[in-house]
Length: 459
Ligand SMILES: *Cc1c(COP(=O)(O)O)cnc(C)c1O
Image 1: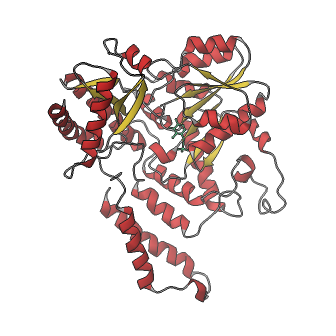
Image 2 (image 1 turned 60 degrees about the horizontal axis):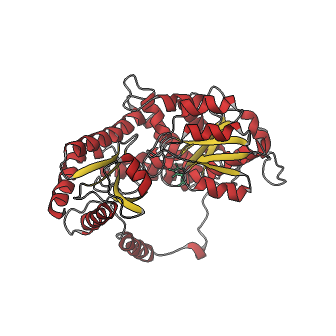
Image 3 (image 1 turned 45 degrees about the vertical axis):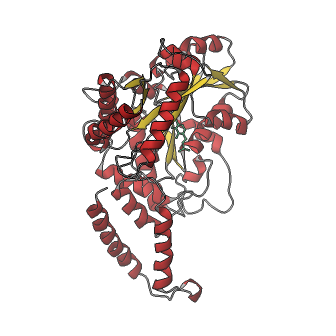
């Protein structure tokens, strides 16, 4: 992180807020809230100490889970708005930040190519997906929601919460939905909505939305896109020289709803998901009357089109400010940030191809790479044993640790991808790296070199 930028922004922020505060007549803080500086700083020092057990999410050496710090501009904007603490549930609670939310969501909808839309931010991708599935059930109460095996577990769980029918469609070994199996189910006429993934959480598998969409239209089913992780890669698909397969992303414009998490690839702090519907008339499902909220304006209050009530206006402020600085462009802005993460994964994949000691598990479709030590023999048990030992060793070595993740894989899928595999166990474990920071691009050669040297010594 650029420490200077953060410090400078925090200084600006203090003065801007005090100007606004000082424009009001003075009052004294209630004694119950007053504390001396020593108490506050010692509590913060204790917090700082406690936080040290975290992995260094900010550093390129951390390539484990989908975690990275927000951009300093997002932190500063969040801090500034948070001191006022607007609530985006109603215009009374957050008149400025509710407008920012609508503007930011309109930018995201435009990125997806929606001509019309209804959408808002949520506190997470889980809630955003719940909302999309809730609308799906409202439109087709008697029909099922279909999701593939490697979809995020939230879809199965939320179908349970909604008490709606659901069907699991098999995934292909590469993690994408099996379109033949989907068509067999669609033919039965019992599916109302199909969930497709633009970036599965485990390997970043991208469903062929451009193939699923015509199938669904043929059989009268809706399409919901779970782009919580990969939605922002649409920017790359719209580039003149795309380094991903653009077709699934360009098909989003014709889908019925989409979820994207600005707190994953949009440089935002946690608490920022987003759901967007292509048909604004689904807003009618949210209709409710609250005797105590919507008074100050006849304009739309966000609480009238969302399941959640209170939500941080600061989240909208942070996203809005970030998009002013890093707009949703393909070649610059946020697009450039994503290009670098994608190139880091391609480079990692290329280095594996040249390596004598590592084998690629699946070619990366986004910025997540999966691979395993080239053991002799290549058996499910040996691969698991070596992956685990390398993982433990890299993470726990005293100097220059590297943080990766492990991925459990079932043997039939592993064997389908790697025909020579000796199957002596039902499941196996491979290594997984999420290269989601732009700094990963420059750091890949060094990190890969260190990993390769370690594997060489341990095979
Ligand atoms: C992360 C993720 C979710 C859940 O989103 P949260 O913001 O963690 O609640 C859902 N689907 C996919 C594909 C994800 O990657």
